[in-house]
Length: 162
Image (cartoon, rainbow, N blue to C red; front, side, top):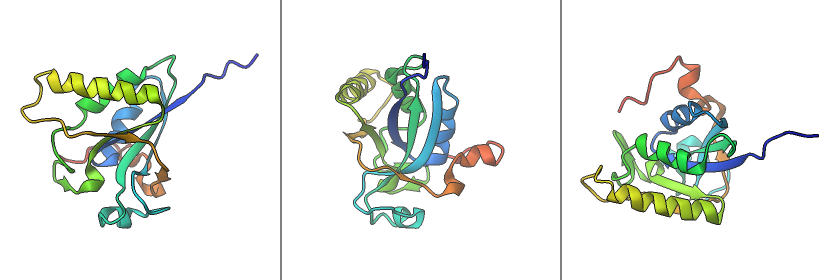
């Protein structure tokens, strides 16, 4: 009998995807992460095109996870702690719509969980400004260039320095 777990996807944008990917790779139950682009109108955008802020894409991380080992709510918890969701179209020194705070949902259940989580975070008292995180349906996911995949891990750790 096949005991392969049913895996699910979650997609988050929280600034520079190098940092976001590194943080989600540390989560037990996450089986894969992919840096890429979502939320824009150009097919197969390049990093340079996304950085030009003319494609509408956000830098995102697609998280493939085993829901028997980690819940979507737990992934949302990680998302809220790894960036400042009150910064509109920026994280630290990275500025532009491509660095926006965004949760792309893949199912109605993810949408509902994201909205509840955002509301709860907004009431938590952790932030002095309103949360500006966008919640939107997942669209085409375009893989970032290979050198962006697990960028910080390949270079011995580090961070995006913000």
